[in-house]
Image (cartoon, rainbow, N blue to C red):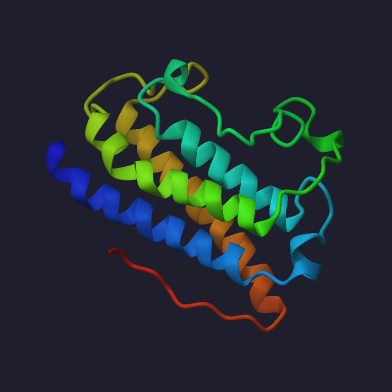
Length: 160
């Protein structure tokens, strides 16, 4: 299982790079536009929040980002909330934190564990790691599609 770790690290960084590109190149009108809870900035934050959370070995290890606000990412009430948007600069700072933790967190994870580490996911840890990668890439793709509709095309990231 440990032989998978370099590939997983590379794919995490590539997926996060695609997300960073979408955040960096997003014009203000798109950043603040959209219908809550799927406005661009919120979807970017949601992606980073769960990437951060799901990179932990166990749920109990998670320490939210210092600028986290519950009204932005609160599971049950997310549909009705209208929080103050994060700025691109704030989310790029959060992106740096999440990207910087990838290698050390993947090194800590036991990919052979039958437990995901998240009580609501009854799947093995490797499945959970792959689920996290799919989640990052799904939302990065959604954000990149919004930019493409505005005529902003981005390059594909593979791995570092």
